[in-house]
Figure 1: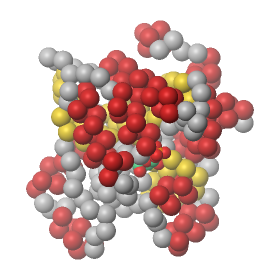
Figure 2: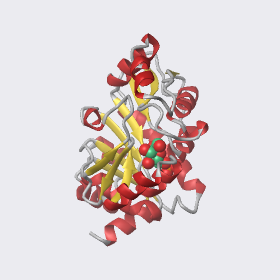
Figure 3: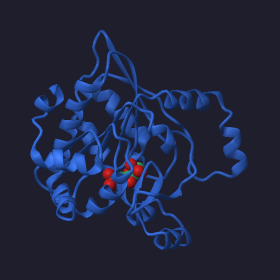
Figure 4: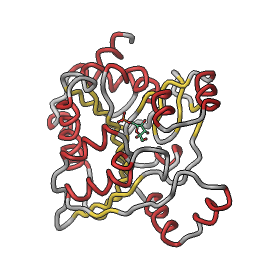
Length: 258
Ligand code: F6P
């Protein structure tokens, strides 16, 4: 197994991957809750993984935002060759983050670091249904949505449900609903309970969870003891081809309960 040799798979990485039923886990020592350096290391591993996995030709890489991916993005290195080009697009539009954490900004950063190109999806946060519908007919927006639908790679993180609801300034009513449904994890604008079942979805354009299943290269980057429950919940139903890049703090917490 070339990949196994390359990434020197450890026993706990195999155990975690088997437990989640996914292809691979990469575990960085430390706790990303406490140490910024751990997130840098996530970035290095993501960079290596993209280098070794992405095929020749035109790749379309869909990106989610958040602090983890925004910081990991800074570690990317040249991914372009005469045979391989990479286009970065935001995975979903306007799901509520401050500008530097938005998928648009992160895909621009990744493109700059890796010598790729990027496209921006301009979909504002607060829109009436009518405006939203007409916006979706705009050629510039349709074009980017079509690119997103052709993505062959996705990079995303996983967050804690209630933390993400608060960060996105969701209404008290919605937060109560999430509590009642026992939401513990969030990814792609979807909320999941402990069993990995979707309990709520923020209705936004772009990649939908069912589309993610058909994407050949999926990299989930999330760590920290505080995220252990969320990671475990999301991973219960994660597509098998997912590679999880995480840290010891999250991995040990999860494996302790297995
Ligand atoms: O809002 C985008 C997003 O990727 C969420 O899907 C995810 O829950 C969150 O960011 C992770 O953010 P952070 O890396 O800051 O924990």
